[in-house]
Each structure stands twice: as C-alpha cells, then as structure tokens.
Length: 350
Image 1: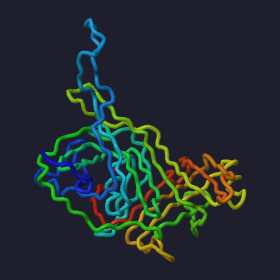
Image 2: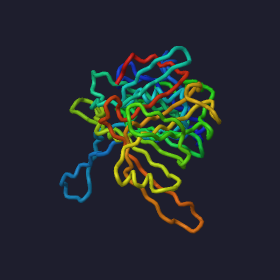
Image 3: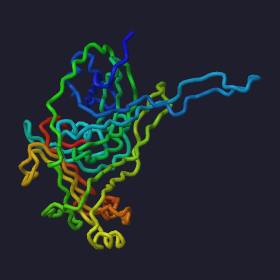
Image 4: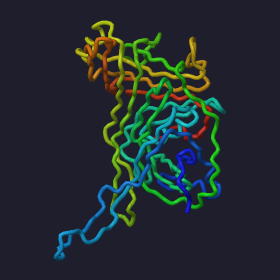
C-alpha cells in the first residue's frame, strides 16, 4: 500500500481530443506525445454526481433501504500562472472562435466570442482530455471545456482560474507509463502588465496606459450546464451553454468625479488588459516574444463604490464592469495570445 504524499509529486497532462468526448489517455501508447504536461498551482477536478438516488421504499422502517448511482459529470477548477505556451490549448476548448496564424514558434491566437449553444455530439466542438496523477493514482477526464476563465494578478504575476466542465471520468490504463516533462516556465511578472482605457469604438487607439488601476480581474462566464440524456451511460451527454457574461472588477485611485459621472451616466468605454514578455519600461506588444491581451470594446461600469474606509486609508473607488456586445465591427471582447506553441488548429474552430 503506498504511503501518504504531497501534491508536488503529481502532474497534469492536457490534450485536445480528436473527437469531442473520446478520451485520450497518456498511459496508452502514442497518446502521451499528443498532449502537454501543464504546470499548475492547484486543481479540483472531480467526478460530480449531484443526485445520487436513495430508495425510500416503505418497508416498515424509517430509513432509506437502497442506493443507486445516478447521472454524473466532471467539474472543477484549474489554477495556473498564465503561460502563453499553454493558455491557447485551454482557450481552444471554450465557447470561442479561435483563429491561429503565424509560423513556427511565432504563433498568434485570436479568440473571439461564439454564440454556439452546446458541445452537441457530432458538432465542431473541441474538448480536452485531462489526466491527473495524484499520489501515484491516475485519473483521466474527457470532454472537458472551459466554462469560465478569470484572469487576474497575484502579487503582480499573471494568473488564471479555469473552471472546467467535462463529460466523463476513466481510470488511467497504467500510471507507471507517463513520464512528465515540462517546458521551462515563462511567467508574466510585475513589469509585464499595462491597462489602457479609451472611448468605446471598434478600433480604440489605446495611446497610453492608465496608471490608476490597482490590479484587476477579468472574467468570462459561459454559464454552462452538463446535460444527461437517456442512453446506457451515466456520464454527461454534452454541455449546454447559457448567456456569456464578460465582466471585470478593479480598484482605482479616486482622483476626480470624472469616472463616477461615467458610472452614473452608464457611458460606454473601451479597456485593454495587456501583458508582455519581455516586460519593463518601453516594452510593447509588437516587440513581445510571448504575450496576451484582452480587449473590451464596449464596457460600462456596473458598480462604483467610494468611501472613507479609515483615517490612514487611501480614498479608492471599488468598481465592477460589464462588457457588452452590439457594436458594429467588434464582438464585445477579444483575447490575443502570442505563443511559441503550435497547436495546428483548423483555420477556424468553435
């Protein structure tokens, strides 16, 4: 019997599936090279069975008498430092349209919202198989998609929380086979980031960065729900998406009434959250070898809170924003990733 161990001995492997929901297991011959070992901070992927059935037959006793497993799906979070080497594979398996351009180690992934309603079998959905080794025990999850992504800064380091939904879990064929190999880390440090603000349009100039932001979190929530159908399987049949809700929250230096008045008037503005490698003074997107940026073309403050919180505290504005569509020539928001990783995606995938 194996002894207790810590998470440092574990690993996470991710691969795009050839057919959505058809599992890839890195311990099966030739599969391991199809995917990537992804360095993470933490994960909570799990077999999830919301409504296990307990029989309440009336049998002259006041206690349930039997149990049957019911429908299940996979869900949980993967928290990782943003790495342009790995971020594209997750975004490809989300409710977006992904355009890949470039050559060799100079790839650009342009990711825009999609109105696709579900990962219905036989459609064009891309899914992930995710294999996790925990204390030398292997778990493989199939048909996984990103239901929500939350980009933020943690002590100045770019970080993302990917909330996953998946169809099924399988046992790893042979946990002794996978050999985790990782690329060198490429982190986006405190000197990598800039935030730009401009008037709402389909081509904002974003001439110079705004120095009043104290961090940010940008979240895309697709409001997905697993769907189970009457077939001879307990696993989920597909993922149904709801309304896509892009939003952000941040804290601003409160310097004047200008932004407060924009909030009261529900004025539209454009925002860009940009991170580049190499960073530092004078760094640019054009010169970056690896980078990611999120452009919001039409956004509005949802809340704007100011107050005197304490005698020695800065006067700050705590704000949340909602990103909207309906702008001719733009699609609400756009994510761009400059990456050395060539996923060889089809010209367009949803």
